Image 1 (tube, rainbow, N blue to C red):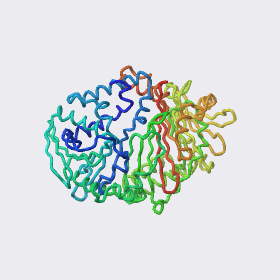
Image 2: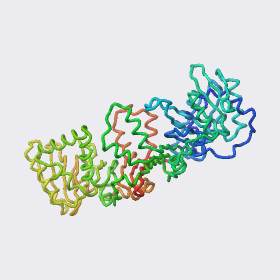
Image 3: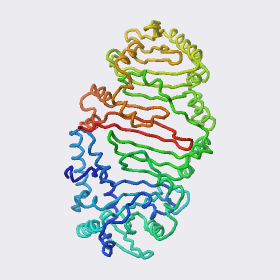
Length: 549
């Protein structure tokens, strides 16, 4: 399998091939005998595929077969990574198709036009997850090439076939040498496949005018909803998300807390998409909310504290309103005993050091917050060149300072720590020192509202690191940040280039060579949650990958 023949599309042979082979597809030969061998008139979009999916479907997924989109994947990675992937794809192609002398790139890829898998409830009521019935819809964009493929399978395949008529449509039931049974039928330019005969029958009913998945207003709207993702590869649609999840949860032994039910009721539908963009893979998930049932009006985080983190920050968690998060946890504890037990344990633990966790700790954490791990030029945790940093913004410095004093009193009463106060260029800094190991914790106020706490290193070392380069000027962070919504609720960021440097200290053989190659081609990962409007919640994740150019 050459690079040119794959055209990047070799990344989805497993899904597409499984669908084709699972059909026992030699019998499809009969369907193409009377068909005109020309290209289909319409592209099989998720909405077009939904026209032959029964109305009872509660979710679906769509795998694009667009060559341009999959070609972008082939642009990722170093030359070594590309060679490793090519080898793996050749092995996969041989494993799946060698027995039937089939090549995905030559025999299947030229005629398929999108693959949809829909999930239907079983005939009985109150379905469990394991009872769900899948229905696969494969678009046929070139019936002549499809016929050649099925002719080849007819001659070389090892299948037992049985055909029957339903609503003037031929249904073929195929059994392979392993005893697996599958049924399929051709509906215009859509090949439908399922394990059960009655699932195919319901697809035929929808094809001939019965209510379909595309006729459901919520599903139709969702299948047409655009995502801001380039070169889309795969999408997932769940039209009635809250009701669907609630129905499955009702059939479990675990009680559903009222707070969880309320959160489910807020979500009307969800769409998820993955795209292959120039800088890397972009995953986006959009939850469409019921504005009448959604209480929280989320405000974007300004990101004022990001510039205080050094450029060598290789892990960052950033957001706003720790106090609100704690209050929500307390509220959930009133309905969920497990959460309530956690809240009680946290309160009890801080009570041991004479702190009221509600009033003395979380109450003043009302602004932005950030937690990061930093690569340091010197010192750090156990002299490994690592350090932790916490930034907390508050509108109640008085309460925060009192809490810090209580922590200092506690540390002074503990013989394991020495407490030292020093002045770092005009900033009063308190250090906790373990004899023989150095500073394990320090804190000081950067200004009237921002408190910085360092872990495993000193305040002074972190400030020096920030002077060299701030996180906002780090090329990896800048690239990922530019690909994420600017109006968001905070960032999660992981710098793989710096992480790989840390992993180099591990013993040889800890990471398999092929995994190490892939890790070394990944530059970084960034994630955000945003709220474009009161009725939408959006999650974005970007995996930045070296282009190898």
